[in-house]
Structures are given as structure tokens and as C-alpha cells.
Amino acid sequence: MKRFAAFIKKLLFNERWKCNLCGKEIFSGYFCPECEKKINYNDKNICNRCGRKTAVPEEYCDSCKNIDFPADKVRSALCYDKTSSILIQNFKYNGKKYLAEIFSEFISNVYFKNFLSADFITFVPMSVKEKKNRGFNQSELLAIATAERIGLPVKDILLKTRETDRQAKLNREERLKNLRGAFKVTDKKEVSGKKVLLIDDVFTTGATSLTISGILKKAGADKVTVLTVASVPNIRENTQSDEQ
Image 1: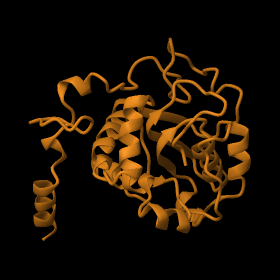
Image 2: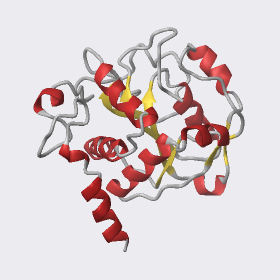
Image 3: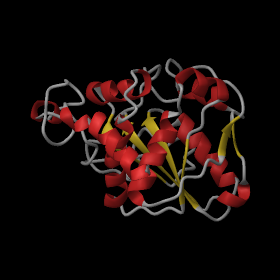
Image 4: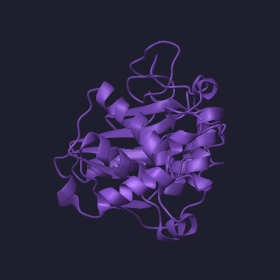
């Protein structure tokens, strides 16, 4: 029955029938040839630490070398720009949850290309109110879809303990203050000594994913790797961002 349901889902909601950016009819892939050229894959020069796009390969870039960085490595599939922003906005706010499948393919490609390893996947949590308002947690959908592709279990071991202000218009210091005490690990035994893969949608200032990475490390995680759909090439004060 599950296979039949999956077949019907693909038959009725096949995202491959049209370009996921412009809506033009296509017969293969996710985008028409014109839109495919607009996809800015983050697969060239990057910072080895935070994974941001850089002019030349760097071990530590200006964006991450002077900040607390508890994650062992961060990698992103796309550069955050106008095109990837449209896709992520459609995924989060415009009812196109099926984009999680496309994003998970991009993310899993990064996982294998970088020879990453983990014991399990987890995701950035939302508060009960946030999840109720949106109807789903986009990071959870990404984690589940990615887990299916790379063959790892998903563990819901993070809890958002309080409401926080929207991060979009805050600078990094304001974000860190906003997130202080907002997350916790629900079961330290699940984390202790493990290599954890943390999934989120966008890496901007890194406040959210790095805060959670630090909490995972304090709970005993041996290694924390962060994978996101996209990351901004450079940090800007008061940047407009989609990071939770």
C-alpha cells in the first residue's frame, strides 16, 4: 500500500512536469534549460570551515575566523541569491513542500562529494506555536528527505523551549542574544559520543545552527556537521535572511 500511495503521489504531483522556477513544461530534470543556468551551485571555491563561497579556497574566511564556531564543518548546496531565495520562499511559505525532495538531492550530493559521515541526522526545531502557524517544520522535512537518500536515521532530539523574535532583521549579535537558552537536547544519551548531522534551510550569520552545534557538543556529541540548502557568500549587518 505504501508503494502504491507513493506511485499515486508521483503520478499526481510530479514536479518534473514543469520547471520549478518559471513553470515552463519540461520532460526531465527539475528546471528548464534557461532556469538551470540560474542555479548557483556552491561547488567551487569555498571556506573549508563554514562552506561559504569565496574568491579563492580558504581554510578560515573573514566571516567565520573571529567567531565561536562549535560546528566541525558547514556545507551548503547552493549560494543564497535571488534564484535560491525564490525556491526557498516557495518551499516555506507558498505550499510547495515537495521542493524538499529536490533540495534533499542537492544536499545529499554535497554529503557524498565531501566524504562526510554521521551516525544520525537531526534538524533545527521550531516551537509548538511556530510549527502550528506554518503547518510544518521545513528543516524536519529536509532532514527526512535527506535521510532517505543517504541512508541515515533521523532523530528528533532537539527542543525549542521558548518563542524567539524573528531573526530576519537582526544582526549576528542580536540573533545570538535572541537565541540564548532557546534550545536544548532532549536525550543526551542519544548524542553522547555520536557524529551528528544537523540539517537547516539557510546558513546566513550561522547564529542558529552554530548555537545548536554548541549545545550538541555540550551534550557530548563527538562531531557536528551542518548541511543546508544554501548559504550567503558574505555576512552583512542587518541582512535580510530566511534563517530561523
